[in-house]
Length: 436
Image (cartoon, rainbow, N blue to C red; front, side, top):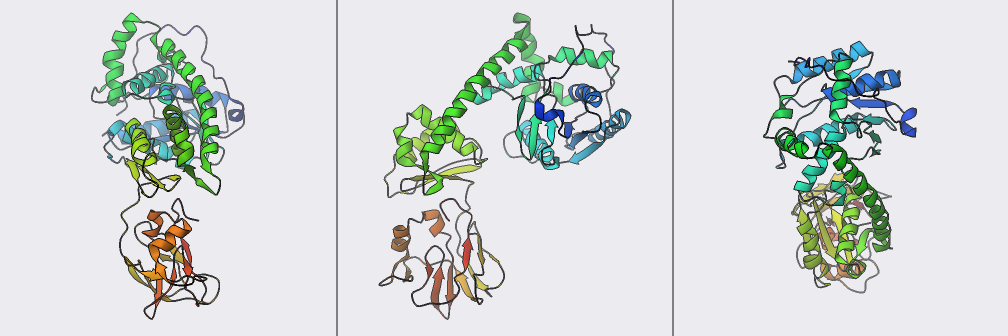
């Protein structure tokens, strides 16, 4: 059910709300994230007049509250009144151990991203007080410079962009605009529920802080801007460091020796930037310290691994790779006709037919201690020795398929055809860092 709007009369702002438009947003199609709350309602009202014909609204239906259907209907109705199409995006919020706020936010942004077309600008209604709250919450979580910089006003958001035009606008100014223009909005009870971190900060801690520092939101907003400027400089340094750390013959890897040559602080920044560039979850501080001691300081013949939720870093010789967590390698024994693509289990990828006549046979995982003589080799050797000679990382070897016919191995992933065989070599695509 849509809650009634407050009828408290507020003094109108000194000047009408206005938006400063980044150059790309002046002509691009716009998609406004419209929750139906006060902030996004004000933003929708402002943008309807400013961007007629190229604005649509997206309402994310989380299904977390009994009134969710009513809220969606309200948003569609308001859009119809203002002449803006409102698309309702239904999502399922999955519990992942990080709390309902983070899970709902991730589900919301995934849905919004999926709904964007190429080059479209997603417009969201976060304002100055949201920015200040974000900085404080990140400070309480022990965040670094990037977290203390808060939200950016303009950023890439593939396949388009993300724009927060109200980030310098205080919350009271938005409420005054809404009341002055007789707008209708939804009051979400979660906004006042102390079970949620942001709500607890907003309803209990913020009034106390603001009673001592009346301009707190502006001061914290200024701090976030300063942090963002410092962060931009560090981003340039980190990007240059990551490029210098890459292994020339394997651009997916960073050099262990080059990483160890950096100071710990600079190394940690470079690792964060490199991991973020692969859209993997950021490592915890203790994870970075473990990379220092357990991975970089390990003997060259070890294959250490450091993991955190959603990501892991592995080392092979002088190279470091980051990847999504790999499932444990498993044994497999499959029949293959040599024509269709064959999916392999546990992250082992796919087998595809090579050029030439189909090569049918049995596809299995090699056995411990198995020997093989690849083409050009003088004699058969243990697979471990062959892989070591070719610099194939352990996590690739553990998943390499073997093609066998009439009890004889005729091809092994990463090693090729056996000596004397003339069949078409299958194509193995495993998609793992350190291969191909």
